[in-house]
Length: 163
Length: 99
Image 1: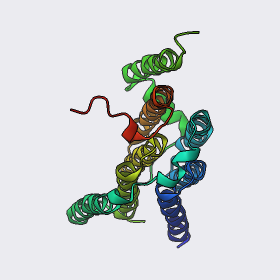
Image 2: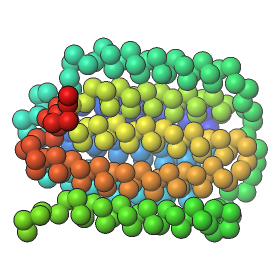
Image 3: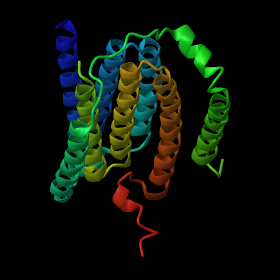
């Protein structure tokens, strides 16, 4: 019962914040609503036996991505874009496309036979770390190269060439 | 909670992201919508990991978090370049490649 209430609250929070994030007229508000939605996701991870992921979600997303996006909003002038932030001529096609995708996904889920009772399993951070550094070691190293490439790429792209 | 509840929640979040990516005219608004979609995918992975009692889904989610962060870094660098070139971050202003 308690888990149902928690899921309902988190889901309501997440969906409302997500809807406001894509419709808000003010871009700063939109980014902050995205942050609310991402924190609600971290709470959902806690209920799904993934505490380490919840911590990473808050550190990387709300700590890193949201700060970066706010910098992005403030470095680019968006004052005269506020009135035209959403293209109203695209609203109907947008709703139709999103609704169609949702219909397809929901019907597929409805027909698929999913096990409903989750198994009890050891999801400690120690086990997660052991799994990353044994089975997924190559992917982990490749990811570190990707992060380095992204960092260098961002510096090279955003550098002023006349300076 | 049944697995379908998590999957439906993530599908709804993903569709909000699609709506945002299609209707936003500001490039940073499009990035926000893309973040919502990536987040919805991660919820699916964690829910599957819980249902089948395997940690691999959580490892996938960690990798996907790192991928999304690098995507945002490059995306924002491109937005700043767009702003320098056009003094605006409207997606409509980047139309030089239009035939």
